[in-house]
Amino acid sequence: MEFRDLKKQYTQLKTDLDASIQKALLEANYISGPQVTELERQLAAYVGVKHCITCANGTDALSLAVMAWGIGAGDAVFVPDFTFFSTGEIVSFTGATPIFVDVEEDSFNISPDSLTEAIEAVLAEGRLIPRAVITVDLFGQPADYNRIRPIAEKYHLKILEDAAQGFGGAICGKKACSFGEIATTSFFPAKPLGCYGDGGAVFTDDDALAELIRSLRIHGKGTDKYDNVRIGLNSRLDTIQAAVLLVKLKAFAEYELQAVNEAAGRYTKLLAHLVKAPAVPEGYVSSWAQYSILLKDQQQREHIQSALKAANIPSMIYYRKPMHSQKAFAKTDCVKCDLSVTTSLCQRVLSLPMHPYLEEEEQRAVAEIIQKQVL
Ligand SMILES: *Cc1c(COP(=O)(O)O)cnc(C)c1O
Image 1 (cartoon, helix red, strand yellow):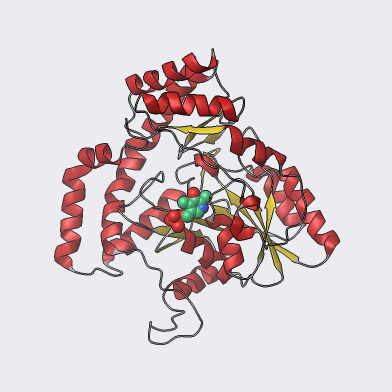
Image 2: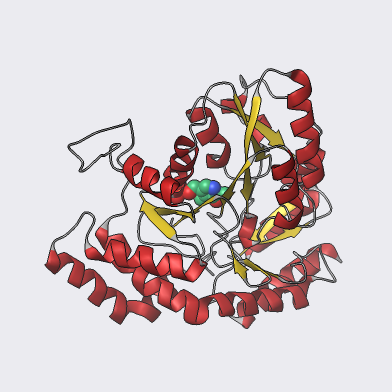
């Protein structure tokens, strides 16, 4: 069994993918070819925002957003403690300070109450200026924007939506990548919408920000890339990756998102009486970057993971370590806030094989092993 079956997906889409890649090779516009512009148009239309700016990866997409806002030394950026490293890394990279915030056990996403507590703590200390919050749509489920937006408005914080895992999700019909003033995603192969290498994108409705980000992604270009008006990055999406994504976006929109949601429904039916299964709130759609269950304790997780492994079933731990205990942040002087939910999740969470091509028989095999371990 595969954790995320990219081979099966390729086999399914092979005719169209091969033709699209072949066309890009023959046309030889390997950098910034017409496929890139077309993909940006389609992605913006899918998400329902004015501008999509593709770039080299999801980490750069986050960096471009923070650079466009001019966030740096002396600024505080609030980041969930339970996420992939990039979300905090790019804050430190710009010279700003990441302030880690606890998450909610039911959604794995940033806790609005902990966010308020962390902002108040930073203000009370008076050393840093609160500038932005990076909301992560973890495992495919959008964060709680209805509760986060009023907090951001009250404290004048920008919302940067990290939808690296969230592309395809929605709240009441409004799509992920449209909730932040700037939103970003990643096309790393295993993400909900992945290419065949690294890739990423930035989304915004703001014309001036979009223009600035287009400049920042190509060496801070002015009229062209040999006229340089600011310090930027070299962060473009390859034409070949755009050619891959044009085919994959079509499959994603036509049936993959629905198929992965059907797979999630089957898992929940098989597992909800045995372990804590992920619950999607009313009105929300998840794109199921991961299907993550919550176990009693670390010991139960170890037993289940080794039983699965013995049956050749892969499982993963996202994430084993809270951001605040990563060695790279050891010198980041954090404001002391309660991060106990994240600490507990890191000991109990387990992600199961999940993708649009997962079959019911495979899911039954996973559930049978889990059942034997918990009963
Ligand atoms: C994958 C991921 C990123 C980074 O994306 P890359 O394309 O690998 O640079 C950022 N944030 C989150 C939450 C991610 O899962």
